Image (cartoon, rainbow, N blue to C red; front, side):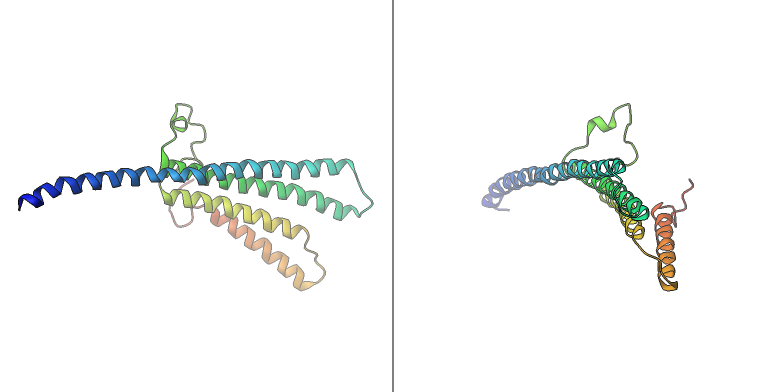
Length: 186
């Protein structure tokens, strides 16, 4: 090794160390999706509350429409509110998971009280993905249920379609429990 190469080594090491420090700090840009998903959570919770509030206020004002369509409309508003809550929960899990994985573990979540232990405990990307998929599938099931409320059954094929929809919702609910194929006991 020449004298020139030996003096170059420490300098390259310093540049590498500086670059790695900048690279490590750059992960903090992940705070932007965390803040936006938490803001979106608040928005969807407010919208869900407004939708359910609209249904509650609709109880006081029975209009001249048929009783069946009135109930379907009110129930549709409640189901929409629940769907918005589920979407808000998915956004909350996403924001929490991104923060935990990329920025810093949340010390408050690891306190002695252990509140929020199950759903918000995220240790790796696969766990975040699994929890998000479960909540989003439930949200899709609720959306499908809302669509089924307005489904009119007039003949055999429409009844078969309705029954198939119920079967698919039941299978989805069974699969989202997550125990299939994992050998876990409840």
